[in-house]
Amino acid sequence: MTFKEKVERLLDAAILERSHLFLIDLKIDEANKINVVLDGDNGVNLQDCIDISRVVEQDLDREENDFSLEVASAGVSSPLKLVRQYKKNIGRKLKVKTADDQEIEADLVDADESGISLEWKAREPKKIGKGKETVEKSVNLPYSEIKEAIVVISF
Image (cartoon, rainbow, N blue to C red):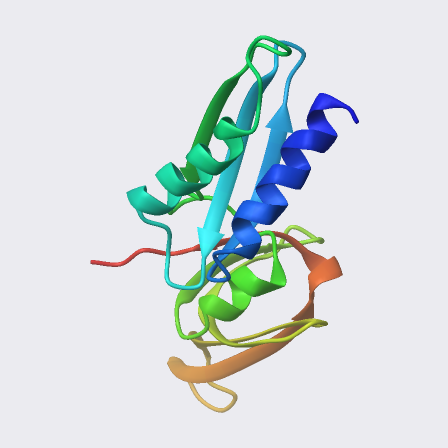
């Protein structure tokens, strides 16, 4: 079993015990620097990172493979990658860049295995007469059409 396979197995076991957490990214470079990025249905707190780190670290032998381990939560400005992340952010505003480089800032109203539904209000010229009117818009986007989606934080 390679070092990476061993880390993956340990990480899978640690996350399985904490069903509210899920893995976003795992990187191991040539110098055995392990970077783990987690997210959770209710967010990730410091104790979650500590617990995962301890479980992985206790079963790795530094004599066999010297390594460094960093466990972190997905940052607020990190792009969404998994369906589970979209589902947990229903009701929040997203900034979505589509495959054809269109940018949409809208409320995420639904997410399923095939894609997301967005709704927003836009000012458009009136169909009759001068001036603009506010119209409600919506779009269903399959994940294959999403280049990047980031949660917009508003204060």
